[in-house]
Length: 403
Image 1 (cartoon, rainbow, N blue to C red):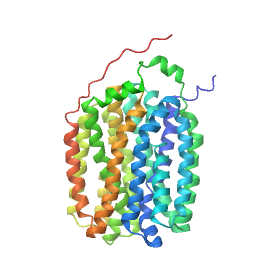
Image 2: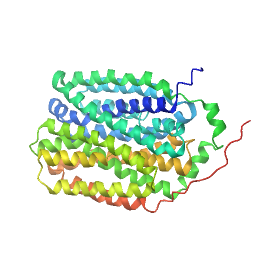
Image 3: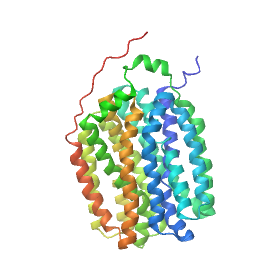
Image 4: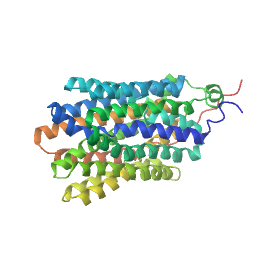
């Protein structure tokens, strides 16, 4: 048996899912550090939020570049480099004492490393490993694995902070992300076989095709709203709850519940995407998010309303990911899937930057998050409308003939 035979679609999905579990699980810990770090370092919430906003912006900017490198030269190389950079960034974050140092470590270094280990990188390999009829479900399972990371790593991260303090907790997380390196060996692809089975198209042709596709641009714009909503909640939700006289553990449990129900939601939306029109499902998902947020802020904040909201918003959390990736794969094919989903994810992270930073700015300016909650509701309605006119017809091209 050849050494490559063990890299079955199931093995690719399992290891890719584990990579997302670790990379995204650690990333979702940063909201837990907002209060202890700002209190110890004597910096404002906007300063911390700006560093995390830069992280998300760099995460987005690097995705098209790392996606292109992964499509051309191999995903495993990108993942290994990203894991090393991620670990270094976390270690430097643990010794940061000023806003500038926090921006360089948590912002620039970790942001760039996430671009090497996020959804777009892993989804490219998974998308090419499964046939079209199973692709949305596979992407949904991978998305659920990333959600499991949020569910599992948040209690782990809070426990570390409580036991050893935030400095040492970050160092332990730095060691944790290095597990990505051995897992990446499963995502090595046979580029010769891939070239023989896929259509002949250069990267420049693929980019021009996508740029000229109105539906792709609408999809990217709507994805901006997704990033705005999710990262505002992920980073500011624990602090918002403390402001409402809830305990830090309530915020941690709320985020963990988001992660748990996100596992269910990611799989469910991916499964639905294999059976129904993806653009309509995306519109429904964005609209449901706006309704959930509107109901939550209209009710008194209690542990019960927090946990119910977390469950509902968790079910809607990353359902956009398998639907967006599946829609891009359906329209454009899978040859440059990491590149095209990476570009879409750049738009997502522009929204993430805005959601995190503006959230901190609004709070420091007004002493309240009310304006931000209203913005997330209105933007969700806009995103629902943007997805409706997308032309989701498949672009058919002749397959490359074997030499």
